[in-house]
Length: 194
Image (cartoon, rainbow, N blue to C red; front, side):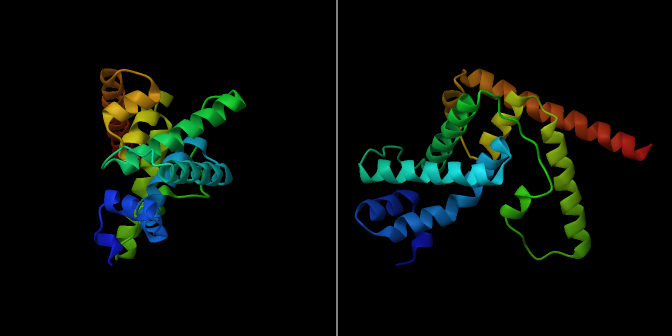
């Protein structure tokens, strides 16, 4: 059986029926996105790994208990679980999450590579580095929505539920984040030309 051709829901049914390969394929599909969304919030490799593992323990327990009811929404569901674990961590630590991109981890390496020339690779790496620096400058609420939407593939309704705001507020934060990124990119281009 080619698991790569199976839907998320089919893989979940396989796992619940006792076939571990279903969960292995789901993990292969979404590990990078889920880990990245956690890492961008906690900015600590070991903590991100711990939260990632805790998230999948919750996933496994929920699936085994037969309580999964998010038909066709596996990735947003797991991302929501992970985000809630991040919130719980920061509540315990009594500090707000801070996204601080360092040189020890490059999110864009996780997202996959393709055959490219050295020049293309250097341009891409510089562009990603610039974009990460600009994302870091966004207000925390805007960063959070941008990360959940782009890296977590969450809907605005799911983002609103997780962040405990209205859908309009979540949409507004995304709009402000994109507008602010555009302004910063335009400003950066102008400063490079002068």
